[in-house]
Image (cartoon, rainbow, N blue to C red; front, side, top):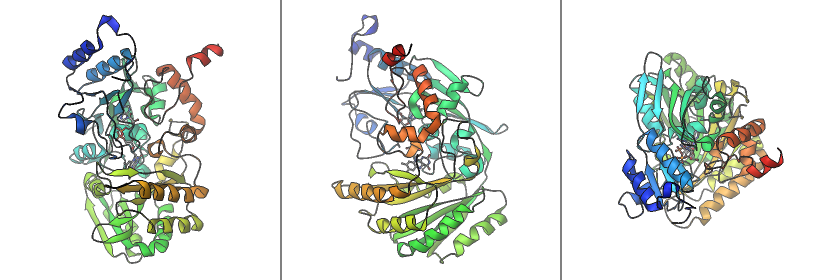
Length: 469
Ligand SMILES: Cc1cc2nc3c(=O)[nH]c(=O)nc-3n(C[C@H](O)[C@H](O)[C@H](O)COP(=O)(O)OP(=O)(O)OC[C@H]3O[C@@H](n4cnc5c(N)ncnc54)[C@H](O)[C@@H]3O)c2cc1C
């Protein structure tokens, strides 16, 4: 097996060590040839086609410790899989070990303190549904299929960020397995340096096995969508920009340029009111329902988890994706005029341009308070090419060309959850002045860059450290 280095500890052969790992796991070790292997090696993006040597499907924190120790001792490269939702395919690899958290689905809710401890294999949809039973929620990614832990570690924008801050602003503690196999509690009072770094620093510091979240009362939301023909995109996006720029913290609106089955090419605005006064919600959402008027208006009072499901159809598992993104501080008229013709030229009905706003509470936290530095109001724009089969050429060309055409309007820096590909400059730009502190933290906690399949923060090399005394 490639990727397996040097000498086995305690004079075990590698195969003996694999068997011992298999015997000790409460979860399951999946190998090539096992019936579960084909499904287990895959991630959401069907373009990613990697063949791991072993997949440790962990059930407990101790399983994660065993898997980390095994991979470190046998010098196997590792990938950590939360929900497998990241389009870059960081959650799988060729010839190494996948630490797969998908069986870690435990949730404990304390309705009195409004907190929950969630294990790291839960998806956004699973956690939100469990919390909905209690009339509680926390900020999540807009796509229910994303892994809650992966999305959290990158910051976590979403519907509730304008009211309650990013997902990381609602984290009370992490449980972390480090490269040395130690299990740490990471909070404001225990390992506070790591608490700062895990809130936005991605999977760079170890495997997070559980997260404790602050929750908020959210019995239901007034939410839904208005849909206009794509031919009206100019006026609708102008209206959307003004509506979004002036939205109070209780209201957030996303825009999608896409194709809706049985309807055709559209501009769709999804919007939610997250306050506790339904009459006020009706009043705040009335302008968006009146404008046009839209040819479809579906607004209703629903549970938060049900609202998330309304968009699940847009990004099914297994479809092929190529989805570069950028941020804009503000949409100028010229930026909108440049963007819209690219929506008209999408090469597939499964493609979309998605405009994610960030405003309100998430932007009132200091950039240096957590690793996530991009705290000014902005929009993230994703050019998501999606297709089921056939060559990638036209799809990739559309995504790359439309992305390139918008670069004159792009801000510097993009949330790491949305960075496409492995791009050191983009990682530096995302962390701005927090970058050096993150490098120091990485050098302390993962000096060999064992956890490197992520938006990677490189440690200072041993040689350089010696040189600098
Ligand atoms: C359709 C769609 C919509 C999205 N919308 C949003 C949005 O609204 N807001 C937003 O912020 N992001 C959004 N994202 C981005 C998404 O949050 C990231 O892709 C995130 O990385 C997904 O997490 P995951 O656990 O599913 O990913 P994975 O592919 O499993 O992992 C992604 C990275 O995180 C690391 N990782 C995951 N779990 C752990 C863990 N427990 N411990 C250590 N490292 C871990 C992995 O090693 C990998 O490097 C969206 C993505 C998609 C596909």
